[in-house]
Length: 271
Image 1 (cartoon, rainbow, N blue to C red):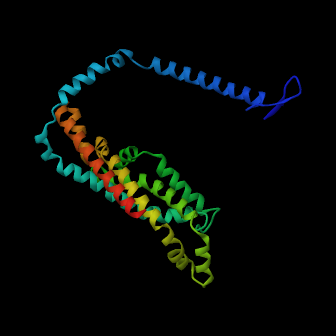
Image 2 (image 1 turned 120 degrees about the vertical axis):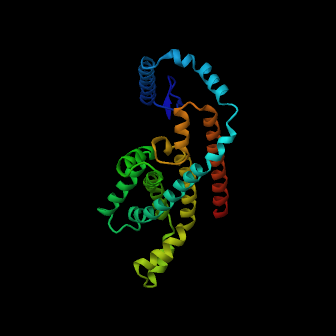
Image 3 (image 1 turned 135 degrees about the vertical axis):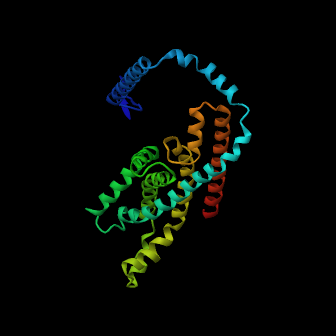
């Protein structure tokens, strides 16, 4: 902004004195918070183990290589369970997320005062808790196994899918909806012929994207007993079978790369 110098000539400055003072105060508070946090972390850290970490990592690397390739015959069913957990969990979440999204969107909710806040609460609550925590809770309720993993993935994915979908619903072209409404169509007909065709590409993209994410998340659910290849990983880690661990990690990496390739191809075809 322009200010006057001693000669009365206006000189442009980026910030006023008050804005500069507030900026420096903000930096001072940020640096002080960083120093305090670092001090707390330092007091709770055993630095001997940190400095010795390269030696430990090298020792584990030597123990884990080469991978135990003959163990791969026992990983077929676990990786298949992992794919099923991700796929079924994604399908269930999509079925549940669609009505939640329509209830949360401003232009389709039956009540912006009562129904929409409830739908938004469902979206926030399911997204705020990690799938591992959902799996721990569900294992305590329904027992360990693949079914607990499927339900955990489904609950975790509802909020993600519903949020992106209701944002897509709110961004549709209103003129198409108005044109169908002007013909005397019912509310359901307007939704089926005016709204759904506009959000189908977004829905397909969200479904594939979430399935890709769920492949990654389902690989670790077995660490808490929710089935899949993570269960094999947990068992191998417990007995320090590092060659098996390295092979399992390679299989997980291969599965994630394949899912990423499939996801990219499908999204490219849709878009």
